Image (cartoon, rainbow, N blue to C red; front, top):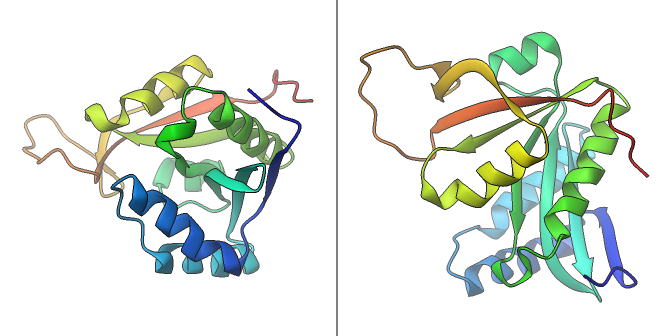
Length: 176
């Protein structure tokens, strides 16, 4: 992977349309309004939105929610890495790892733990593998729907509202 012309930076208002169009080109629906909201959240200090570019071309992004809504993270003041995306043409080249390293580095300044959640169907397979390989472990609440742990016997439709949340102990991590 080339890193000479790689940049990690904060999202800016003029990025929103470019990001949306980049995902639209690969068939993903991520409206410009989503990123405009992210710019607002960043300005308000609610999220960090880290954009990655290679030679000026958008590669992907990750966000950090500083005060998440998920009850366990909220109670323990664990910042949550959320909405992590790398364009398909840039996947499996180390770009996502660099963004995750940066997100964890920022979180480690304020917390000994990072939280993350993922969907439980095949579309999330690459993320599931990445997070486990990075040392994230399930938080013990099992599957969660709309921020509430599911109970034995509950019937659900598997969609993006069904999440498995994980945490990572950052104390031993030494980021460069």
